Every structure is written in C-alpha cells, then in structure tokens.
Length: 234
Length: 234
Image 1 (cartoon, helix red, strand yellow):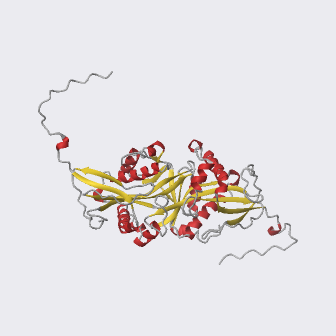
Image 2: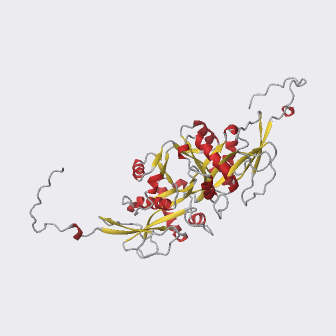
Image 3: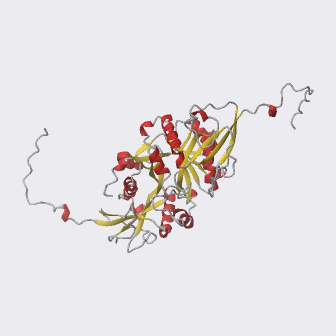
C-alpha cells in the first residue's frame, strides 16, 4: 500500500490567479490539406529550401513545370494511390471549411497555442488562398508495398517545415497526418529515411514509435549509370 | 613496338576439333514478362521462399487472396504506375511470342548457355503456362519519386531467384530489366535496400553502377505503433 499523502496545506486566498484566467498566449490556426496543381509554386520553393537546408542544391533540378507534370499529371489518379502532397497552412484566424472531402480524407484542423508570436519574414512569398493564410510546410509521400504483409503502405520522401515554424510540433503534425491516413486505410507500414548522424531526428522518430533499421543500406542507381541500361541487351 | 610473335607451329591435322564443333552445353531459354493475377499462386510461393531464405517467416502473413486483391485489384492501374511484378520463366525450348505488348514494355527473351543442366526439384510446383515452362524468380517494384529531380523512379521491394537457378546471371537479368524500364521511361532513379553485412550483394550492386548510401537509415512505423495513429487527435 502506498504511503499516506501528507495533509493538504491550509487553503488561504490564492496568491496567484488560476491558469485559465491568464492571457492565453498566441493562437496559431493550422490546417493540413491535400495540395493541388495551383500549389506548385509554393511546393517548388519549399523543395528548394529543403535542398538549401540539406546543402544539396547541386542535386536540385526541379522546375515548376516538371513538378506540375509529374505530381499532378492529366487524369491524375486519386489521392494516396500515387505521389501525394499534404500542405501545412497556418493562419491567425480560424480556417473556413473547404470542399476537399475525399472518401477517405478530410482536411485536418488544429489550433496551437504559443507563448510568443511567430514572425514570418517570407509570409508574402508563401501567402496561400484565403485571408492571412501562409504555407508553413509540406510532406510528400506515395504508396509502397510489403509483400510479406501483402499490404500497401506509405513511403515519405520529404517532410519539411519552414525555418520560423520549427520546434513547435508542426513536423510531428505532418508525420502524424500520414501515419493516421495509413492506419485509417488499413495499410501495413509507413517508412522514410534519416541520416545516421541526425540524433535529434532519430530520437523524435523513435518516440513516435518508429524502428530504425540499423542493418539496411539504400542502394541507388541514377544518372549515367542508370541511363546505361536504356539500350543494353539484357 | 610489341615484340614479334613467334612463328606459328607447323599445322598438322588438328588434334582437337574446333570449339564451334563441340557440343554447345545446355541452352536455357529465359523470358521476363509482366505477372498477372493468374500468377498469384506462384508469386505467393516465391515470397514465402524468400521469407524462409531471410529467416523471417514470423513476419510473413501474405495469402494468395491478399496478394490478389492488393497486387491486382479490380480496375488495376496500368503496369509501372503502381505495384508491378516481373516474372522470370525458363524453358528448355524457345518461348512462343505472347501478346503482352504494352505501350512501353514487351517481354524480354534471352538464351543462357550453361555447362551443366539445371536440376529443378520443384519444377512441377512452379510449372507455368506453356510446355515445359517453369517460374524461376521474380522482382516486385513500384514507382517512387525524387522531388529534387521532379521525376518518378522505381523502388524494388523484392528480387528473388529460386535456389537451383542462382549464380547464373538471373538476378542481374531481373535487376537490369527494371533499370532498363526506368531508363526507357525517362525515370530518375532505381532504389532498393541491402543488408550491410551482405558484402557479395553489395559488390554485385556496385558493379552494376549503384551507389550505396552509407549514412541513411530506414525508419519504419508498423504494427501497433502505426495502429495507434488510427484514432489520435492530430
């Protein structure tokens, strides 16, 4: 049996006011929705910022036009069956409801309360539809497949939050949105890669329930080495 | 200048017959074609053999029925736009032409000459359509996406050759078929994973032109950890 708790102290007039009477900080209204072709200019800038962050701009060759034709081709397949982008938008005012209800997805709304307001020096550049709405990040994913489970899953190619929005839970929100979608659809796995020296990211992913597959190495055939297969006699 | 070659020996009646008069060994006729739903029983057995080989049968839960509904759903998308299986078949007689010509793929035929015949103890189990045709292996792949390149690619989930057909170039044939398809379609990358201790496989992949991405680790969210996201309030 646990030791008895000490008796409560006498109850004077409170010296501090109750927390729910304090000013409530700054509300940030968030929405995660499916990107469409009109979002491509923002997606292009986000991918470029990611390349800068990863010091890989020498590998960056995407254009708005090539993104449009590959992410949103004519006769696009339904969301989640091919390359899919969730956009994270933020606003200082609540989002109106939008008409983007697919059979298995509705935009996700959440309100985050912060101690300090966010100053976004690129708010104009990332202005989205609607009053005061700004694109803060994105996640790009597509179906993968586990033959052992005989089930599809999702592979996350990119997850990115713009600098002034980091360390506020937005990355977790985007990753959770993909995981929730996979779970809702009865999928077997969500997978992505992380750099082995990025210990903060690894800790964060493990806390979300992910296993890090230590023994596996990704093999990549690209550029001239891939092109060499175009005309070989197999 | 190179040293002069010694004069040829006098030319008596040849003691051995010329090589092209020798018996030519054993021809194995090979075909790589797209799998269809009627191949599912073979695909199921191949995946199970792969699980046995990898000592991962505890993770194997695929059934013929679950493979059929996920690999070949009603209204299947065209090959290469979703989960795709190439089957490797072998025969002692040449393959007839089959009517499987998609806009960007025709079955691949090749003849391999071996010193010794292959004894296949499971030939009956893996008997395929046509006289004397046996399924020897498969590769399962699907589109992935590089946002830096703004191009699709292929991710190879499984590549497997049955035991009695190994070390004869069939694995290379299957991998080359996927790489050739990617190159032909203007895709940017082909990727897959390898276990870091499998030095023979790594050497083989590097010889084919692949880079091994040493710093990356695969993160996987699966099972209960994934299911926990089904009902969370993001």
